[in-house]
Amino acid sequence: MAAGEGHRLHRLGLVVNMVGGLRNLIFPLIAIAFGTSTLDFGYLLLVGIAILFIGFTLFFSWLAWTRFRYIIGVEEIRIESGILNRNARSIPFERIQDVSIEQKLIPRLLGLGEVKFETGGGEGDEGTLAYVSTEEGERLRELVRDRKEGAVATPAPEIANNDDGTADIRRFEPEAEPLFAMDTQRIFTFGLFEFSLVIFAVLFGVAQQFEFILPFNLYDIGAWIGIVEDSGIDIDAISWGARIFGAMAALASLIAIGIATGLLRTFLREYGFRLDRTPKGFRRRRGLTTLTDVVMPAHRVQAAIVQTGFFRRRWGWHALKFVSLAQDSKEEGSHVVAPFAQRPEIDPIMKEAAITPETLDIGFRRLDWRWWFDQWALLLPFALLPIVGLLIFTDVGARAALILLLPVIAALFVWLSWRHCKKALDENQLYFREGWWSPKLTIAPQVKIQSIEISQGPIARLRGLAEMEFGIAGGALSIGGIPVGEANAIRQRLLDEIVKVDFADVNRG
View 1 (cartoon, helix red, strand yellow):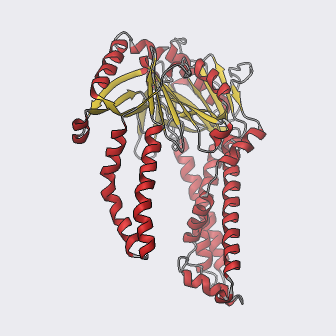
View 2 (cartoon, rainbow, N blue to C red):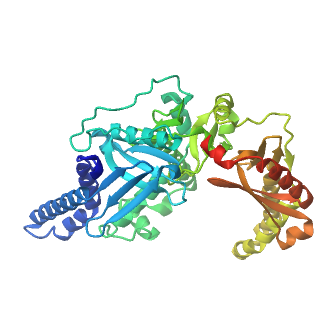
View 3 (tube, rainbow, N blue to C red):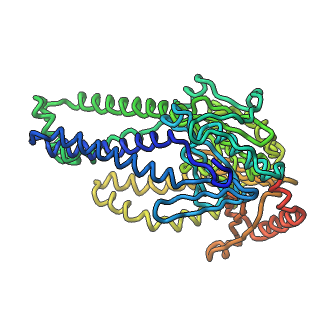
């Protein structure tokens, strides 16, 4: 293909689209099968519909493939698509924050990948190429990096992989020791902490799809009891001891399913996790059925987030995330660079991003407790209705216990939130701790803070307190309960440092 005509996607991508279409056909085919089960030609009709659907899918996929082009220019990547209505999207190299390569199971088996260009515009991927060969994906990522850094003045050489899958140019970087990696044992330990009941949401979703097949209402408890009694079990004859044992067994089964689901999800997501420090930045690869390969320039790291959980912190396990303009995924905004690590493993990674880990002599200070009390008091009226309902449907003794217990529980939560919320500021960075159940520490270099806002509500104004909002590219940091005088002093101090920085130089690294 001539250079001026641009590039097509890989032909094997048509196979991937066909498989995806078949996945969407499963539920309609099952519904048709039940609807035509009484007809003599029902199965022939089913096969005919499936063949017709596959034919239409392949035809329109092929038509869209012939009309799709991506052109690599000197200053931009241009993507043209559309069968009837032509769309042309130009993405300047200087706007691209990240180029990621994702390989789901079927494309991975075929040696294909999905290339995503992210601009940090807040709406996800600006452009997607689905699918190209893995060699072409690597070439595009390297080309974008070089163009952004001004290292390539002429168009990069083409590779012949668009139609027949061959490739004769690829940049290989020698594999050094990873900055961080997780073996199977580490992933298994991680999965034990990732308790999840998402399997029940999936099962209920499937049950709703096939609810028309069931002979009773899925949410009718009486129908379930009837099924149990029809099997010969008299529920009224079951002793309280047996009922308690059954409830405990059901709870144990629920916990076992939650642990197994968490293990499975963790293995699928984190298998082969590896973080490397390359000349281009941080390169992260992970995934079993879906392999993702992301490279994030080190100078684009805006802040670091160290998170843990109520139980996992007892064994010293933490997660490290980097805040940047690009999104990690639809579920996660910040880039996960060490999902399950000890602090001695996390600190060197932060230093590679020019972020200094906190030390014992920083001097964390708690915020004004009245801020939390006021927030709780404002939310109290919204809690009155459920509390009144509980008091109406309980006896006198239980009412007295609730009246005494509920304020104590609420006060305990407020106190825990205040006690674990602290801030610190040194010569170069801003630190903020929060959360008692899922503690989180945010470290933001002062040179990366782009705006500072001080706000006060009516009650906070009477208290002489304020909330500070620190604008960070790709995220935000809010700290409430700061005395107004201190807030103004912090803002002035940070502004004095910010005005010394040329952010164009910071973004170029």
